[in-house]
Image 1 (cartoon, one colour):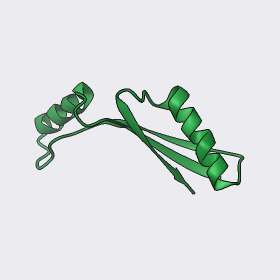
Image 2: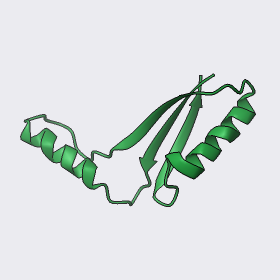
Image 3: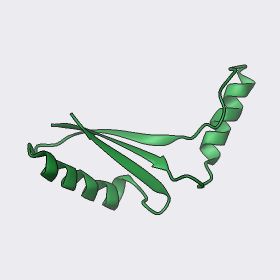
Image 4: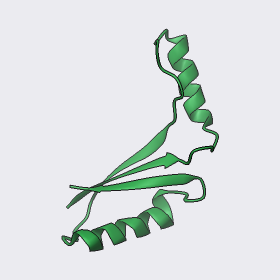
Amino acid sequence: MKARVTVTLKTGVLDPQGKAIEGALKSLDVQGISEVRQGKFFELEISETDEAKATAILRDACEKLLANTVIENYRIDLA
């Protein structure tokens, strides 16, 4: 089973990399983009076929390594 995990900063957490990207886009004359927030994206292959068990395994991976849950949220999508 394939899984996708998206990790983003929680609302209210400063995002200096997002601000740098926003500034770079403006300096490259890219118009109409504001409020850039960056994150992380993971594609994983998981051997578990039971969706509930797979989700539990992925939550464990997120909580232990993939996301800093103090400042980041994560979303799991199974395919």
